[in-house]
Image 1 (cartoon, rainbow, N blue to C red):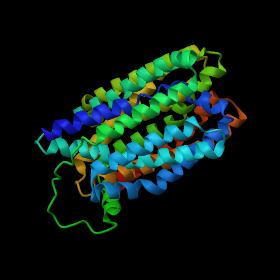
Image 2 (image 1 turned 90 degrees about the horizontal axis):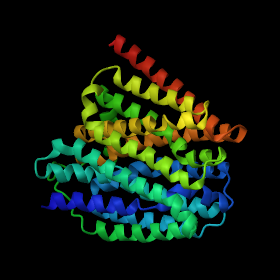
Image 3 (image 1 turned 135 degrees about the vertical axis):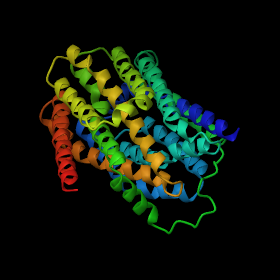
Image 4 (image 1 turned 90 degrees about the vertical axis):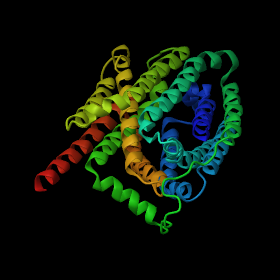
Length: 392
């Protein structure tokens, strides 16, 4: 009974936390408060740097303490983030908001999925984790879709600040829902305590010593790291090509519908993912579409956006499912935090590149340049992996 209550509570909290109608006009709101594209990139860099510093310590806290307490704290910080944004008027205010958002993100990273896995394992249903994770990610995306589609219309009707008030109250309600969660029994409870600092070592060793897991994680990191700025600045690109504000939510809603479909398909695509060609084809195809998007007309480019988000959703579920299946409870959240930290490091490097390219050109051209750079790095990984395999 506890297991089902945990998952239901997590689903409800996820819905509440994603009722952010301001997503559709976020970049426009920030721009109205004096934030340029480079300013936004700088805040993204602050966000990523904080995640790099705090990600693993947060995972260790979740593995050593109460996952419930960590999720409650994360939802409190998420509420504070929107309060700060609503009243922000200059760069320092937005920097504070993204700093709070980073703390919330690292606390959730790994913790939520670890609790879901352990809640299922408590009743012998751990094998259902990929399916449950896919559905949870689909619920996540579906709520975002509703918020995005409605956001553009609501912004024109009630103004942009009103949408942030809705986000504040919805996230505050999520705090109350998280109070209903109970910590699940862990499969290694009663075992010898893990020595301090060993969670990071064990998480890293898990990733680098299992080729099947490493292939999925590298693919997920390449896709997740490269789509970060595409996702962040797509609305400004739509604005630059003279699309109406009400259409922003429809475009982004369609994109996240594709991501939800990808998350639901992740479990089924796991069969294909066992083939050696699957991840290279998925990642390189994904990056080629981003390059294409930056070099063609808007209408043609938008037709391929759904493929990007579908691939993103599917690879994320495959990678996270493999990670939690391979990890032990004593370092499960930390292992996912390590993977997330690697993705954020990639996003930081390419964020700098994106900012320079956007300053000298357009948002679309910056997307193409970032995707090309990601492709070069990923091809380097494939060559190195092939050489290592031949030596073995």
